[in-house]
Amino acid sequence: MAPGHEGEPGTDLAGPPRPSHTTDGCNCFYCTRNLYHDRGMARLEHDVVTLPADQQALGLVEAILSETRVGPYQDRELGEAHFLKIRLSIIQGNGERVKVLLETPEAAASFESLADKDKRTKLLKVIDRHMQRIRTQHTVEHVHVQGALNGVLDANDRTLRLPPEVIDMEFAEAMLEELDRFTGMIWPYEEEDFRKRTMGSFCGIGVQIRKEAGRAIEVVTPLADTPAFRAKLRAGDLIMAVNGKSTKLMRISRAVKMITGKRYTTVKLTIKRAGRVKPFLVKIKRDIIHIRTVKGWRRLPGGKWDFFIDREYRIGYVRLTQFTSDTIDELRRALRSLRNDGASSVILDLRFNPGGLLTSAVDVADEFLRRGLIVSTKGRNVPKSERSATALGEYQSGMLVVLANR
Image 1 (cartoon, rainbow, N blue to C red):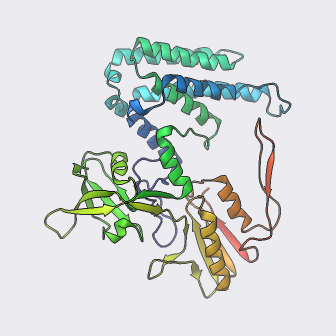
Image 2 (cartoon, one colour; image 1 turned 90 degrees about the vertical axis):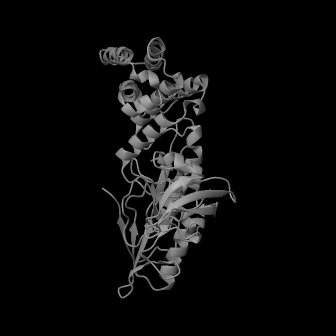
Image 3 (tube, rainbow, N blue to C red; image 1 turned 120 degrees about the vertical axis):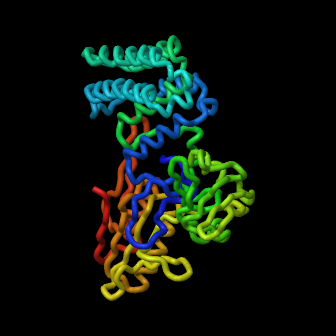
């Protein structure tokens, strides 16, 4: 996830979705390439002390490696050639990922030894040597993947002496990244943000923020019916300090952690507002913020959504910003409202939707489908599961247009 988001992305605005990477919320998935980069950099910036212990990480890596073997089970549809390709990709990805870590200037701020060019070069040569050796082999077993990891760890211990957890994490991330672009690791320190994205709620003040290097944090907008909204924060306000600490050089991820907190506790924001000579202090009590994932075409007075894009032609418009545990209930209310008001067609806008819970996505599909298989899942050690459509959805007659990114 992109770091530095306290509420939800800038999707409370009227009309179609607007891509943004700087709004407050954990849902800024609008650009996959930027997402992976930001997520990786956020991890590099994270205090190494809080990372998993070495043995835990190594055990995790070994567990992942075991999944690349073709074990003694009956279903061999994929075959050994497929797993050979995976193992080759994993080792190549591992090497490239660690090289990126070593060559990223920002990483030197967290790991001082990276400033030693000679030691860094020695470790890079070891990585290149492992990658070249793998390219010339006709067979690649899981032991070769483990061997590559151990080789890099040993070389690191002789050169830069980076915390081994960092190397382990880079290897684990690379392994999963090589499988497909939807697979990734949720580390313990990311669990809260992951829960925020999937459960649709968190504890904070409900404000979208952005930050440029060397400048204070700017309020994009307070979310409707939240503590920030009731405290009368405005778009364009500058948050000069959080609990007395200046935000000018503060990373946005750090600011987010300071702004969020336990329910009913207070955060103090020093605000600078256009038209006022001096900054002033605003005390805001944190509360549960519900991330609304179902949007309409425009806001009505009072804050509710208008789900009609054209009442004359009875065309409805529903936008889903992601799939959380609350999405289906919000969607059903919107579709029921459209149906009761005589909508004959609906535009379902899924553009820039990053995904979310599979169960939520399946429930959403069932609202529009009368029959047929929606999804099936099949695991190596779990039975096949299927979910078919029912005829009980809120919108199963009339025209439907679905908008999605290419």
